[in-house]
Image 1 (cartoon, one colour):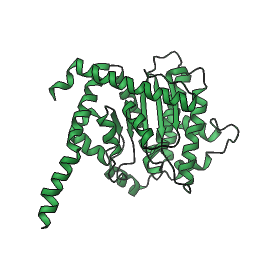
Image 2 (cartoon, helix red, strand yellow):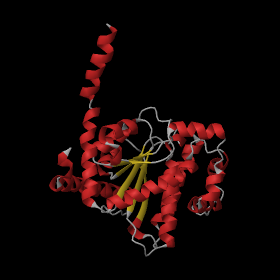
Image 3 (cartoon, one colour):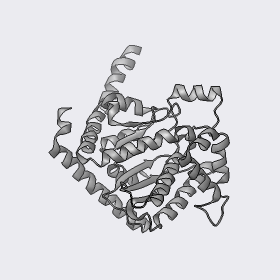
Image 4 (cartoon, helix red, strand yellow):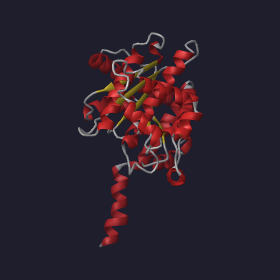
Amino acid sequence: MPQAGDRRLGQAVMKAKRQNKQRLAALIRRELGLVVDPGSLFDVQVKRIHEYKRQLLNLLQVIARYHAIVARPDADWQPRTVVMAGKAASAYVAAKSIVRLAHDVGRVINADARVGDRLKLVFLPNYSVSLAEAIIPAADLSEQISTAGTEASGTGNMKFALNGALTIGTWDGANIEMAQAMGVDNMFVFGLRAEAVARVKELGYDPRVHYEENVQLRDVIDALLRGDFSPDEPDRYRPLIESLLYNDNYMLLADFASYMHAQDQVDRLYRDPAAWAEKAVRNIAAMGRFSSDRTIREYVEQIWDGNR
């Protein structure tokens, strides 16, 4: 798409994005009393809360970023606003624990003066179509991070891309089709692929190896086990976190380092507004392939006519 590099087009797209971010920031302030910077990178994950969708992996990287900012407060950090939303089944204990953890982590980070506007974590309640209409157009980055081989399809990522968000995700579900349509260089792909996930599990996956070898990951896990984000109940998240150390069915610890590397790539690209805008335009344009018109036409030609 030769027009993708047109600077005026990119600026127009980013102007519209900024207006949508201002609208979401106003909603967050109105609903939660929290002030977020529309100039920060809006990093968004909204979907049903489930272990395989790995909202917990997202929270691990948020905590890692928080630790890094506190350790080096004078560094030139790319400001981020991490937005999460979604509903958990009433009897799904782990999912409800992840939601509670998101609130606890946000409460600590958002009140830490050492961090300021460089990092905010927002969990918006009562996710709905109306809320999605405010969140999706405001997203700069779309988190599509399910364990490879577990996402049967997934079309929410297409809605984000159509609205000019870049995707950080695993080689899974509709992420694959999107990458094929727009070019994999226009996404941030990380993590084990489905074949590798199966092979590692077959050979005998030991998540503690990653905990012991990755200092950044170990600091995050230890903070959760100590109760740094739940001082009133230090063991609140012990069952959730120990399940990662001894089972980790969805390979969060195995993908952590690759995920953090991809997040570093996100930060670097976002600092180049023209390059980011060009990729956003390419995302928008590539979503034309996934229109209902094309889908129905192919059903008519390949399935319905073929079965007469």
